[in-house]
Amino acid sequence: MIGRYLRSLDPRLPRPVWIMEAGGLVNAFGNGITFPFLVIYLHNVRGFSLVTAGLVLAAGNAIGLLAGPVAGPVVDRVGGRVTLGGALVLMAVGYGAYPLVREPWHAFAAALVAGVGNGFFWPSQSTLLAILTPRSRRHAAFALQRVSRNLGIGLGGLAGGLIATTSDPTSFTVLFLVDAVTFFGFVGALAFVPEPTLPALAEHAPDAVGYLDVLRHRVFVGFVALNVLFVASGYAVFELLPVFVKNEAGVSERAIGMIFLVNTLVIVLAQLPVAKLLEGRRRMAALAVMNGIWAVAWLVVLGTGAYLEAFAAAALFAVAAAIFGVGETLQGPTQGALVADLAPDRLRGRYMAVSTTSWQLGFVIGPAVGGFVLEAEPLALWPLAASVCVVAGLGSLALERGIPRELRLTPV
Image 1: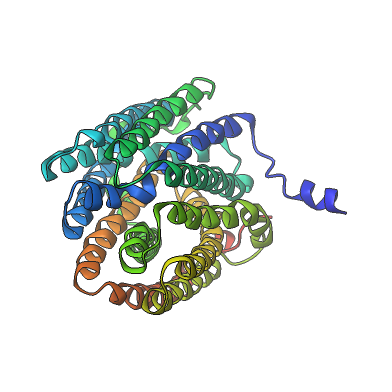
Image 2: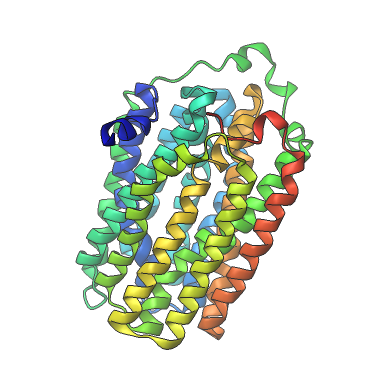
């Protein structure tokens, strides 16, 4: 019976998708090594204020916001694989430059280079993944992407927690250089992934389609507007959790790595079963539940930060990270697959670029606002984020009526 259950979780994906996910896993490990510790590095090691550190994150995401719309036509014209390779090289250069940071403008420069790469990364990666995968299995492909990415990030976060110490700046140099190397590892994996034919490019003149066609799709525009709220009140706030738990509750770097590992383990263990559970169920309802779960997670963080310190605080922060991870498993098979399904073939790169822009905008708003709130009153951030999550969840249910009936349910 157990064997039958495990076989039922097989995502049944083409070989090139598995190769992509292997490259993504290696790269995610590098991202995980630096992700929980970037703000700590800028604030505690280089002495920048929390506002400045938050603005560095926001600046990188802002340039990604500008780069994303440029990436869409490039992906539609030259394909996802080539564009993705270039994006990975840019991010390797950007993150590899962080050990050289001594002044705020150095950090902004590194963030801007990495931000351009990030702006091109997601439209190209998502388009390539969508084209390589049959429509009926896209939810599984995006779920597997969430598994590989979070497994890598979690293991990287654990490794980073064992390496990083604010008393030794060179330990952070190791983190950033390892991250840079993993981007090139992903480039190597792409050598074994074919560049799919884009038939729409042969059938339509390049000037026949554009972003106006995308923006006329009101349901899609509403969906990505909601995604801005999802990201700003969810993922972007999660980026600020490490500096909060260290400075407000006295949690060590090693414990921070463990907190992120807990989040990762929840996603890795639950993502494929949740993706299977969602088959035949309403996509927008899943996103509404996700936001409700995230609101609960932020309230747990609020209570923990207000009343606990050190080990006890770390334990409950880990619970909050686990709760947040459960919500992430609902988003994984839903958001990216729905964008791919809403997009016509000839415009898929642009649709993915607009979707990426919504993520970037959320990551601009979240750290910028969150950094100011943390500086002024750290405990105020969490009820604010929880409230936005509730609003976003209600918005998901309201938008469902506009989704085409054949796309409202996750395919079986």
